[in-house]
Image (cartoon, rainbow, N blue to C red; front, side, top):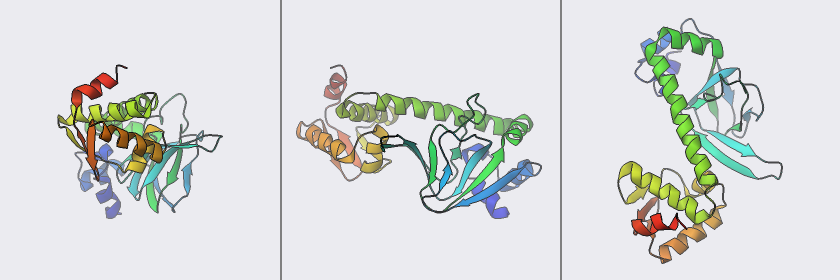
Amino acid sequence: MTNIFEQLEQCELFKGFDKLKIQKILKNSYYEIAKYTKGEIIALEGDEIKALGVVLSGDVDVKKLYETGKMLQVKKLGIGDLIGNATVFSDSNYYPSTIISSNDSNILFISQKDIVDMCMNSRQFFNNFVRSLSNQIVYLSEKVKFISSGTIRKKVINYLLMEYRKNRALKIELSMTRKKMAEFFGVTRPALSKEMIIMKKEHLIDYKNNIIEILDLNKLEEELEK
């Protein structure tokens, strides 16, 4: 049991809590732990959300599946990340995407009622929960911007400029693989690689492994105005 509380210390929902405080706050709450194998569906798009999920171990993929067979990677979740936090209290109380276990994983589920009680009983927990909602809104807003940017080039430029403004550095270390980057943009990996090769030949960027360097910041900004 102690192991669970130690794992929850890595969760944004319990930021600022040690394992003893986590144990105390969960003492009178109903929760359960579900185990999933690689490729197993945790929830289908349209399923009702009855509880908030916390990834205790493994990785989870959030995917949008289309009738045409196309699949869009919305987000990848790891240890400590939340499942359903953006919609668990929504009037549209259902999963907007399909949740799939990308490897063996353990998920802790806490009921809606108990989430409310925890927010009422702990200001820190309430702040953490609201922060998680805000971060999710920002992430989804950025995701929509990239998908609706138009050309692949504009998607890449938007991403690079966002990272530049965030870190104030022309050299950007990617936090995802090229494959995941393509899924995030809603394009194919070959198409993304082809556009990046063209941008490199035009001396707009340079890249090696997981590092991309902006060579002409002004030109990139001008490209978005076209």
